Image 1 (tube, rainbow, N blue to C red):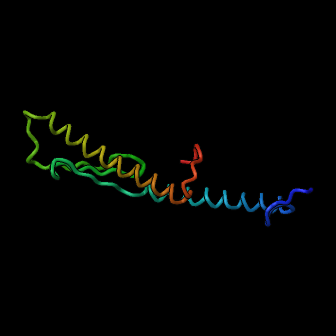
Image 2 (image 1 turned 60 degrees about the horizontal axis):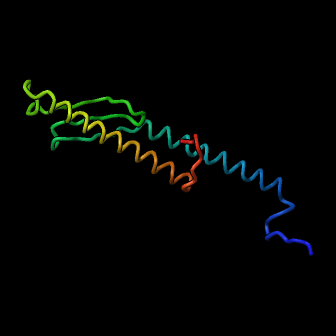
Length: 116
């Protein structure tokens, strides 16, 4: 008895490979475009009830720090440092999460090492 392939399989091997290559290229192009758009975005986060605000780019570069004069205390520089770190880390988390979510949406959950 001869094995039968499901409909749409067989005899179209070259066409299927070409179609797969086109889909992979489109996926790569979509991811590259999304990556460029995300890198151009800015993310802002605050800490200390808005006392410290930081802004960074999608390239994970810190571009701005706003500090309320109310929290500038020469006696407590450590607290100010902690507020800056907390706000920066929150902005980094937001940027990283949006990139992961966007890439997962594009790839349909496909995990390809080295793609992102």
